[in-house]
Image 1 (cartoon, one colour):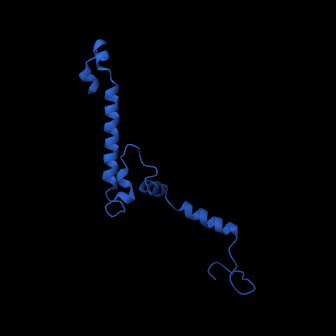
Image 2 (cartoon, helix red, strand yellow):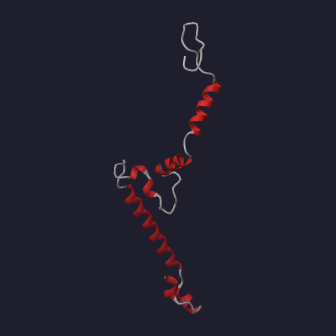
Length: 111
């Protein structure tokens, strides 16, 4: 046999490997996978991507051949809409008259 003589069951079938053998196979399989491949797999699922949207293009289902090819554009628009809403909210909170009284140039604050 390839790896030496194997024991068999009374019916002549090969015996199952020990749990230690199974665990060794699993550990060896995990060790053979590069860390960057694992990280990229999570990124392609959108699990550990940067929150700023800079890695949204790595999400597999948003690619042209993916199940949601319009997803990237929709996510980008949603991020922009949220940003615009936050900007508008901040601008509403600025008390322009108070800023003028305190000597601030309002145009500089908005830029």
